[in-house]
Image (cartoon, rainbow, N blue to C red; front, top):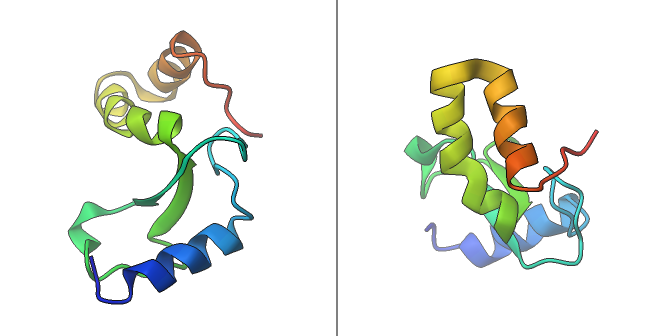
Length: 88
């Protein structure tokens, strides 16, 4: 991570009101996720960092795989299967 990662993480959590931007949970352990891993260490918190609860963060690789193989319906099915409601 960048030397100022802790400050960036704090700003992202504050911006997102300490709430998972996928499911809306504010009760869970929260992670700050890199939208594009290519920017790791060089991230722009305005668009490349997002707050996700641990459960939604753990789903990211599965969602990426579903997108490759089935589009939005596959993503919705996967999230329903895992018991995650999409914030709307």
